[in-house]
Image 1: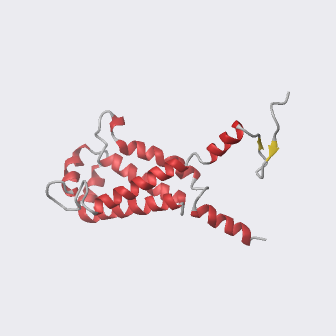
Image 2: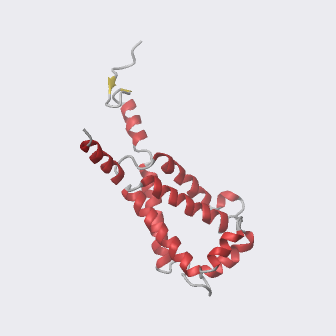
Length: 176
């Protein structure tokens, strides 16, 4: 019993026109909205920290990163990580901000996509285990959701519309 015409694609998979082709295209591009969202959000968060948006990169005072770290220290899952950050709150703040910008740009451009996604996952994990660990119920804290959002990109990388894909195609052209 035939349900339509099937054609073989370059990868050998059978595809049909219409809805099946649309589903396959949507499947290939499914991670693109996630890449854009996470990339823009992390770039914005990094620049927000650097420009004194929600938290100032100071060791003490109202709205400072140091004050925030002191307030979450006793309720975090890993107080030693907070203690490490408290040794130099300003340096830690700059490291997080620059890390967020690098991760965001890396995932937007798709350059070293798995590495960028791993960096984003590690930033989200560290923020979840420190700043938002005591949030109850847990689903009110956004850092855990960001961590979970990074994981598909850690696994899949940035295979489409990316510098990684462009570099891979250049390598294929050079190999005999």
